[in-house]
Length: 57
Image (cartoon, rainbow, N blue to C red; front, side, top):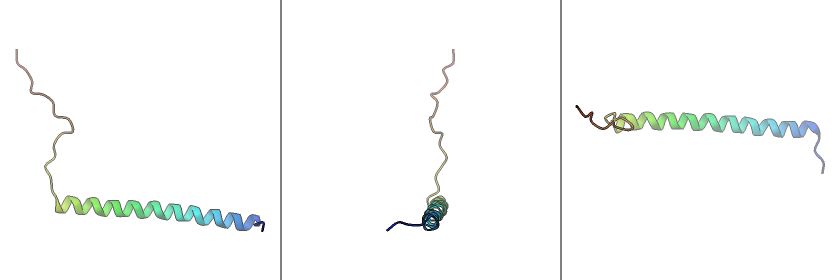
């Protein structure tokens, strides 16, 4: 059952659209999740790697 070139193009286009919509949905969900986490669980900003105290000579 061979597919025509038009059918294969339509299938590829549908897969690309599905991929793009999935990426946009993921970005939206992650943005909302991060915004809710910031509002519900505020935390004090700490440096990623605290430096040791400076030694004075």
